[in-house]
Amino acid sequence: MSVQFFRDTGTVFSREFAPVLREPLGLLFTMGQPLLFLFLFGPLLGGTGSFEGEGSPWQWFVPGILIMMCLSGPMMAGYSLLVDLIGGSMERMLVTPLNRTAMLVGRAMKEFAILLAQAVLIIVLAVPLGFRPHLTGVLAGLAVLTLFGIGLGALSFALAIASSPGGDLFYGVTQLVMFPLMLLSGVLLPMDSGPGWLQVAAALNPVSYVVEAERALFSGLFTDMSVLYGTLCACAVAAVGLATGTRAMRRGV
Image 1: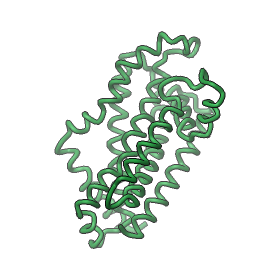
Image 2 (image 1 turned 180 degrees about the vertical axis):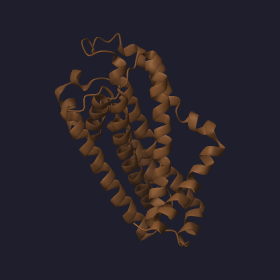
Image 3 (image 1 turned 135 degrees about the horizontal axis):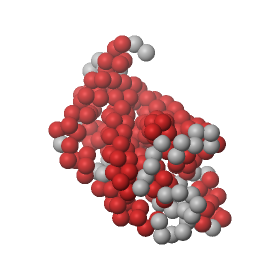
């Protein structure tokens, strides 16, 4: 990769991240749902009896919240691109010398920065509630989360380009896909207590493997096989997302 590519990526990142710095309250507003689950749903898990002998339910629930944020954040990242496409500002960027791949990577890095800041805040707020993170495991878990988030963000951008100019396809697909992925990943309740058909559906969901990897890493269980499976799934999503998004961006809008 050339120096020009990194320069263009930084330019796009700065352009996309500037509105976030100007309106930091908007960043906190997007955390409304995760915070509600953390403070209102999390305490209920201790009384379910599903975590006996497994330590604090927070060790299980907090990584799930981070994946929930990843699905509702980067997965909807294409909305900003769709707005640019409808408004015409994206067309003006396409006629500049900016590298088109850098346009995608810069936007994806902006989503990564937001996701990372939100994840750190959630972890800090969960510690007084009983969450006991393993420091090295948290760093490794955030790295896996980054790969997964960037991949979802890139897929979202590709979907936004395919949905232009109306945008109906983007809204329909994201809503149709996001909630089944979330519910079948076991971020809210253990899937072990579900019926057989539901467990089979969860086993086909790649998000569930990333969730299990996050839980193992946050507890310091680096040798657990779920870490390998989850990391491979995150890498696969990142590779497919970047390849699909880059191809869509290079073909033009």
